[in-house]
Amino acid sequence: MIPLTAYIDGIGLLGPGFADWPSAAAILCAAAPYVAAATVLPAPLSLPPPERRRTGRVVKLALAVGFEATTRAAIERSSLTTVFSSSGGDGFNCHEICQVLASSDRQLSPTRFHNSVHNVAAGYWSIAAGATAAANVLCAHDASFGAGLLEALTQVVVARTPLLLLAYDTQYPEPLNAKRPIPDAFGVALVLAPNASAPTLAKLTAMLTYNDADHMSEPPLEAMRASIPAARSLPLLKKLAQRESGRVIVDYLSHVRLALEVELCS
Image (cartoon, rainbow, N blue to C red):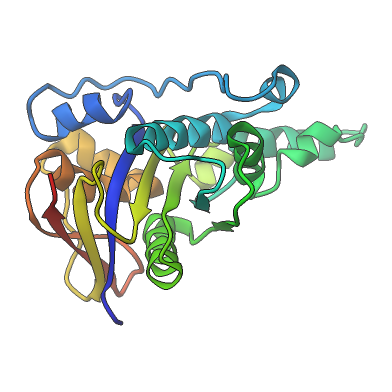
């Protein structure tokens, strides 16, 4: 694999005990203690009221981290290419659909069906951000963060334009949770660019490796990393929060991982 390089201009983060990127960065660099707490998903105020009422957890999560990352990068959202990556869709919506289909009355709400598709977050993003650029949506089970990052970096290298990567996962209710246990919602967004600029935080170069992925030294953060696919990003986020150049390895496939070289720019 040829190394893929881009610049990180903005970060958005939301997850258990993480309210946003600055508060999470303080925890990840040991400047503040980690306090376990359920993820709080804000109302998607960027959507018109009718659409806002229809959104589920996946949409709220993706919009929250996407808007935070683009705000921090001070970049125009409407023309920004996007890559959405998630190991699954809206688990609660899927549960409700299954309940209806298992009942005697199988009249399925059009809104339920609309929100069941895997690209629902991309659709609502186009409304909320007025986005007209291309959006790719992918799923790779537990490898979804790594797959999304590779897709995003490839597009930046080939097209030479900025891009927004959004990786996110939300939990399922029972009985689906018994088969696919994801303890809470976690989302991360990265604004990636082909060249350094004023907002740039770091230069990122990715390549494949057969070495083991880095783990988090703090037990609750390692449990989060291991149990939520999007949280496989935590070793990279920790390196960025510590403001350290160096190498970090994140999970990808069972036999190959991603080696990420981080070089601070500011």
